[in-house]
Length: 187
Ligand SMILES: N[C@@H](CCC(=O)N[C@@H](CSCO)C(=O)NCC(=O)O)C(=O)O
Ligand SMILES: [Zn+2]
Ligand SMILES: [Zn+2]
Image (cartoon, rainbow, N blue to C red):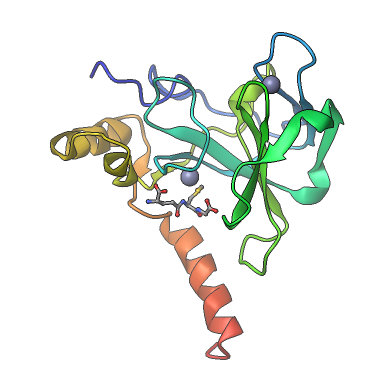
């Protein structure tokens, strides 16, 4: 297909390295880049087709994973960051100059509170956990992708080894439902 899913996966997926130590994420500004230092690897790295996650220009999907909040520190030019949408569950901190999202944080009561969402392509280091699945695939249609092509995208994702889901993976959906069940006193 001519359309890019994402540069990290278009030509096949490179497996991550065991005990990957982490690295630095940098925004796309030519100078005075926002820098975020991550200790350790990402978890649950995945392709996301939703409209809210940051994607490189021309890509249908974002690649996004999580790290514990304690493993993320803004180490340069923090003053350039602003929250994109205060009402969203994930508060996405973007560079006001170049628009890149450096991290997303959940502040409200939520199953994933304590985890920050990051895009490993913002790092020069190689060896981050590879994407494990594709989420929110049907959401690409909301952003203008022809619905007739959606199954071809699912086929392409599967051929790359990424199982496509229209919400999150079963493991993450179970985590969300466990949280809701506990909160309601049903579990
Ligand atoms: N169809 C919507 C879906 C948006 C959505 O629910 N996105 C998910 C996944 S983001 C990373 O996996 C989510 O949890 N959003 C919460 C938030 O962004 O605050 C669309 O495309 O916009
Ligand atoms: Zn920037
Ligand atoms: Zn998303």
